[in-house]
Amino acid sequence: MSVHYTEDFKKEAVKAYMAGDKSIPQIAVEFNVAKSSVSKWVNEYKEECLYTTSTTAESNEAKEIRRLNQLLNEKNKEIAFLKKAAAFFVKEID
Image (cartoon, rainbow, N blue to C red):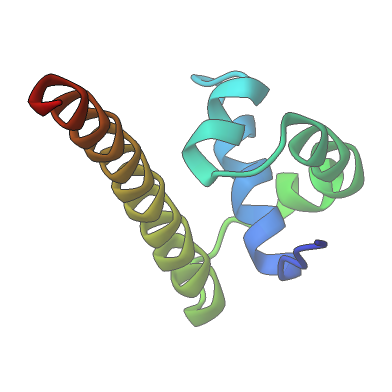
């Protein structure tokens, strides 16, 4: 399954990396994307992002997508934990 990200989303990831306080793996986790994707985006958009720092409606959308991806990731972890807990308690009852 291939996921397509908007150019604006990719540029937001690059800008976050270029801010200098996070590594590519940290950005990948924050944006919920593969490290290889972030590396590729950095190579593609690094120069362009040096000169564009204005916040647009689309970059706000990219931030919202990132926030929702983080929330989804947290919820998926919670679900996985609850499934393990349910399986544990089923074993205890038997």
